[in-house]
Length: 344
Image: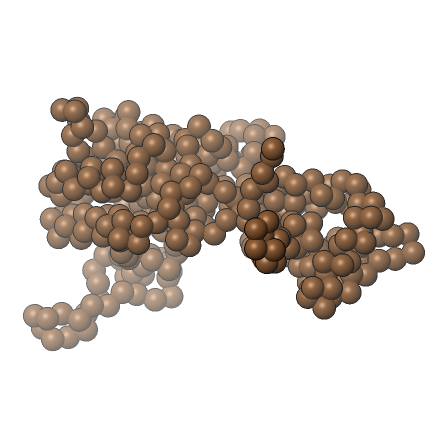
């Protein structure tokens, strides 16, 4: 496993002259069974396209990668194993390629083992129309023990970063166009062509078969994990319903459809399995914990926990996630969704 200093050294030993840039395209697979499509991590095909760039962009992208890593070193960020519920503040997560990333592993394979098969991008407008431009990657080459190696960085592309002028392709692709102020003519002029906004961010770095995740939610979006989490959350709601311990789970289902924040919390509940056997004793503890936030946990005559609105759902999720914790040494109480069970 690399430390931040190791990664910094490898980047410092690379040269911007050898920097390469790629666009990653994602499209739904055709000619596959519905059963396969239901496995979201296998639902899509990814294609890597080489992007020809000039020295100005090459210098910019090289500086972005260096600054992101240097900034992480200056902040002395911890490197921890990926945790589905933890946030990405003040830490970097590691995620092995051996874990679930489905079809996205083909991107890594193409960039590391099939460079000769990667074609250059020709039609930016067509990719925009298809809505398939997914992310971009930067490759840096370095030497280690006189062996040529490379590291990859990835950044998610959002629709707001893309502009294709209607004038260029004759179709109504966008309701806006890109205009630049020319320092030569001192006029605002329409950009002749397509544009993509490149910012000073890196979402993750791939090196030695491991992703180093700087922006967790973006990494999850790039690899398709976030979509997988949503489908898993739906199944967990069904499992909660099968316990017959809850009333009003339709409110939770609505939130799952419209709010990504609940997905990982439900996965945490699944891992803890706190919902499988809610006895009278456990129910009493839940009511006591809820009172910490001056909330009255509602139950019906059958002992089912009642959800009537979003506030109810949020509180029940907290309770099933063991949100309320106590420090063993200090005795202080905390509220957090994160944390790992310590097994003696």
